[in-house]
Amino acid sequence: MRLDVVVAGVGGQGVITLATVLVRAALREGYDAHLLAQSGLSQLGAPVFAHVRVGTPAGPSPKIPLGGADTVVGLERLEALRLAPYLRRGGTAVLSNEPVRPYEARFRPHRYPARKDVEQAFPGARVIWVPALELARRHGPPALVSAVMLGALAGTTGVVERENLVACLREERPALADAEVEAFFEGFRAVTGRED
Image 1 (cartoon, helix red, strand yellow):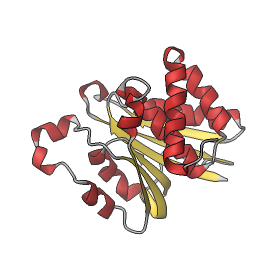
Image 2 (tube, helix red, strand yellow):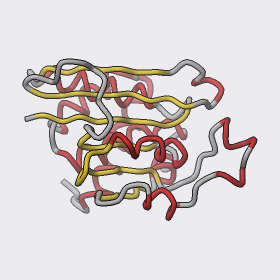
Image 3 (cartoon, rainbow, N blue to C red):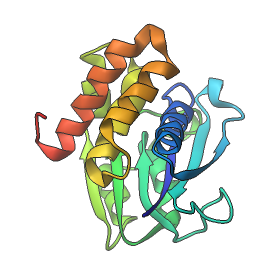
């Protein structure tokens, strides 16, 4: 079993939290896991990305090559477009539906991508839209988008057991644990339609 995931969004959305929880849950299950993250200007709403490799083994390097990701997770539309070259043919793109304009898009609002533009960037891929911000706000602050999208990823890939993801989510931010878990299951239900 192997899963290569690239996650992208903007500062404050929880990209690094999502990736860290996924890696910790995979390690808990005995998988090899690598994480490569960039979050330099994340506090300014700047781009944030993470590469996560899970498997037995997870791969020789934490960096996923272009065309090598099984799944990409976009917490924001403009950053989702930057993920397109990483997704392998026939892969899955799990994308947040709501526009959240990153720092860069504030200066060029006319260049912010429409949903159809994002979909066209993923030819031959399975594209799943998740109303992540709406679901996150049902349980707390917008930062819960990462928990919603982690749940959607779990429902899409099934690579790491939900129980381990939930346990690691609770450990990552104990003060928000209950809200994070509720948001996680909102994301899971959004892509599976299942209540279990």
